[in-house]
Amino acid sequence: MKLWSKGFEPDQLIERFTVGADRELDLRLARYDVQGSMAHIRMLESIGLLSKDELDKLLAGLQEIAAIIEEGNFRIDDGVEDVHSQVEFMLTAKLGDIGKKIHSGRSRNDQVLVDLKLFMRDELRRIASESERFFHKLLELSEKHKDVLMPGYTHLQVAMPSSFGLWFGAYAESLADDMQLLVAAYNIANQNPLGSAAGYGSSFPLDREMTTRLLGFADLHYNVVAAQMSRGKTERAAAMAIAAIASTLGHLAMDVCMWMCQNFGFVSFPDELTTGSSIMPHKKNPDVFEIMRGKCNRLTAVPNEIALLTANLPLGYNRDLQLLKDIIFPATTELAECLDMATFMLGHMQVRRDIVSDPRYDYLFTVEEVNRLVLGGMPFREAYRKVGLEVQDGTYRPVREVHHTHAGSISNLCSDRIAAKFDALAQKLK
Image (tube, rainbow, N blue to C red; front, side, top):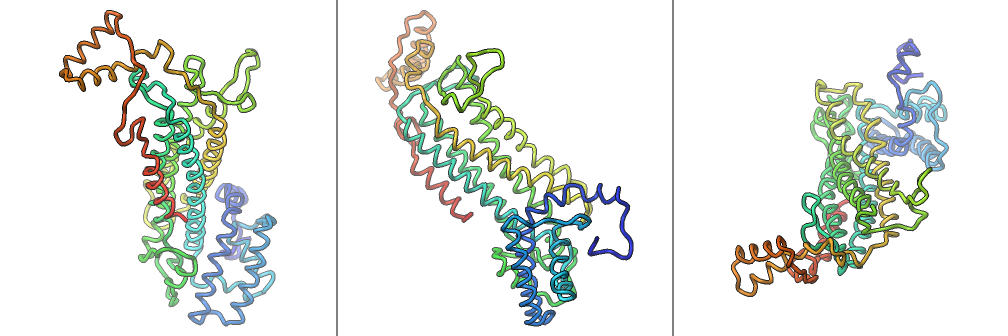
């Protein structure tokens, strides 16, 4: 059953192919479709296309549908194309011809667009909330372990002293950078497309500023063609933010997998948070972080997938855009779940405190020795050569101390400033 039916139904093979997974994915849009419809009909009443009595009946009907959605009992019936049709059919079944007036001044195009904008706003807020929890767990652990030294590496070779305070704090500040992209994506999503109709406006005297206020958008897409062009652009901006956070999280997951390896042995987890081997009784595998790494690597491909889907489309709506939901809907859920799991796992991480006492890490402190000599008056190149020769002839003996005091170093993590940077961005998404 199609709202756009003109006396014929498409072949069932065509129906299955073109609808795809829309009925399942659209369930996530149901509450937003009702929300958008409520704003739209209030506007229609204000310009005289609905009477006050009709508005009251439609609002009551939509509120009933909203309650069904919140209870988890909303379904898209067999033969109904999508969530938008289902809502309208339910209204019409209850109210008769009044229900058919809900679509005046709208196209399916701007109806879908406003649903997606509202959905993306909430999903980006959800990701921001999970990122915030993860961020504060990282900073908490950074402060807790700020005096625990660990090796720093370049080229995966032992390089200079680092600390768990630096390591945790580095990922916290990297998340602050990622939040910049999340805020940008939110700002793009936070514009009202309703009233753009099929992309070329309407001859009805629609009050688009009114629906912008009612739906809580920061602004509207003024040009109706630009409004339609935002489909794909909104998802691509969100995907870039998702990919950035996933890259940070995937990098941390790789570190944890490596640090758990016996060759490093820097961190460990309770047995019940690891998995075993079917043949090797000693194994305690970092499967959570391996799965997290794999998921995050996959999420970094989402912007490219969206770019390829939308790259060569002509102006105006094209059915290809429907497939964006197949890409972006699972991505928002997967990232939120990964962030939640990372916060949980780090809360149970056990940090080894005596790592740098191992002789294999003696050379971590060569730069410290060079700097000590320079501070005593020796030219840098001479100090460098002296320590280098001691390493070569086996006479170098490390002093396992660090004296880093500048901003952002081992003894001056600047956690409060990093927190202020992140919190200022997070506040923009609340």
